[in-house]
Length: 303
Length: 292
Image (cartoon, rainbow over all chains, first blue to last red):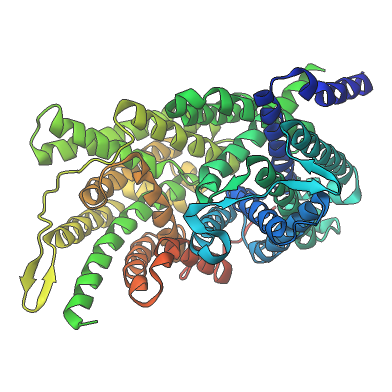
């Protein structure tokens, strides 16, 4: 049953650009990218209970790093560029994560919120590097002889990366590290009493989460083709939170479902900008009051 | 920089600081009662300011009455939100309430944009904005108005918390909920009162600052500065919130004189990160012990 569902989903994902119109292929690419961010955020917030309001900041770092790498090293194949973006963002995650070990809950949320703002201000002001508010054009990318200049090619790149990262996340949660994450989530003190080095695992979660988001940022840069700091404001971070709250904290498939729903909803509400936050806010409140655990918990209860 | 110009910056810094202090107080009042932070506090004061604007513009009320309308509307909104949404979730982990209030802030901001406008509106002030000279120093009366009104409200709060039954009940709940309940205090009643009181304090801050910053749906972002102020003072301490607010207002207004201007908007965030990392419990905060 589960195998069949996975096969079906894979086939649908692979066949999508063959049947769907160009714009929907682009939308599918965004879903894949947002799914990577949602999984990354879920590894941090869902698994180790560290709420982050600053993931748009990580996404921005990944996007600008990969754009700058592509501009200055055009010969580098895309997967390596993405890896560099992920590692650079992971490093920032490490730098933020270690001091943030001292914080929890509310304080961590506010520190990450502040981090997001500072990243945007830094990008705006480092005009020599990022061109500030004028924005940065991202050149077309290539893997060896292939030039990724069509929507379909970028779609396949994003989906391939997303599939790899979904598998990796599923594996993480099935390992000792994943179990340590979940133990910390249930009770940090009890986890420590059971011999889990909470500080180390929380830092690992921070770095992993930043790495995922950085890779997604790299893809985002290629897909959108133009970066400016205001695309990464705090409301984007809130969108990511809505994804994992709707999908289910601590669930990989929930993250993907939440990312898909929020991305499509975001797009279909493009003509009703004023109502978008109203609906997203209502979703957050309703999930917390009536559907704790999100769609993932709902699916578990049904089966 | 001349001394009189510096004095001008200091006075306007203290005026902004008073507003941050009021917003910080409203966050702390809710936190002390319910151990959770209301992320929608900024949006609630924004709604109050919009209601006051409508009361003056549309209903034609005199300004003081219109401002009072805004403050009362803020209190009513808080009462409704607390009764209808928050109280259902208080038994859950503190995370849930945090996320609910975050959702609420999105809803309120969008609703204000739909009902009123997303543009910036000028907001009438009780005090003049034209600088007057006091000796060699030129300051805007609006700064003194803000400082004076804030101080009056803060003194009223001191009286409320020291001398009234409600104030003592709120302090008791802040110290120990179970003990307070055993002493016959209605903890739920305190939750509701805290929300209303916080909204009123925030609303006063909102209608005081709106003439300076203009009225807009983005006004709610001032809650971030309020939060920074509260953290500076040690979250949970009310005198700390006021001191933190003043300090933040001064830092924010003085920093651009000595640092590149681009950094100005990052100041509250950099201060917050620095404080949280160096002293996570705030400058004057104490470590709380927890039992498993």
